[in-house]
Length: 109
Image (tube, rainbow, N blue to C red; front, side, top):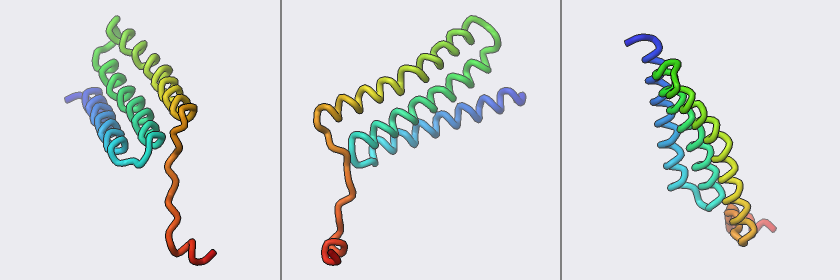
């Protein structure tokens, strides 16, 4: 394996791990907003790393230009879509999760 292939393999693994962690966050987090945050950030970064590795492996060609354009659109539209979903949920009245107060704190007051 060449150094380029090793670097790209590392980037592919990094992207896959980020997307896996993002999926775990979507399952594990308590409310819509934190799940949306985990999904949006992890999805954007994971896809960007995987596509960048593929662009590097493909060499300089028309395919590379297409992959770079896809990366550009992902980095523009994923956060925009996440913001639109969060704003729509807020306007609809979805409240963020707050930590419930414990009985000890209530007894002190």
